[in-house]
Length: 96
Image (cartoon, rainbow, N blue to C red; front, side, top):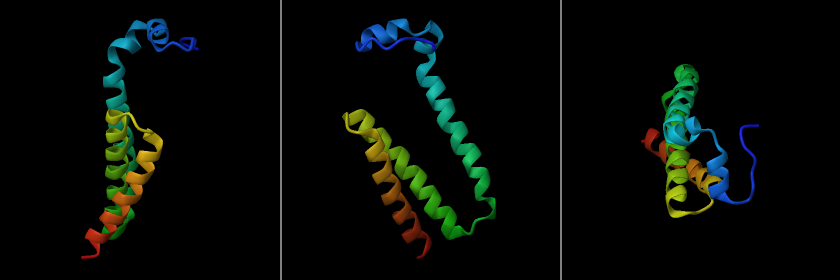
């Protein structure tokens, strides 16, 4: 384990290795982009409607998560709602 949780956020951040403290945002962004790229490879055999639904859900989930993270809400719930709304919107756009 890299660090122990003490219940105090400041103490927890101080216990993290310096590499993680300095590069946390970069590593998170790289992880998100890598996941998006790898998951997009599976879309090559999908039809246009399926791709639009999946893309809408992915963008909606990221958007919901980002808004909740900034606003201080529950990120998991916001990501699920965003994925649902994004999937519906992507499907609606593809069917037109």
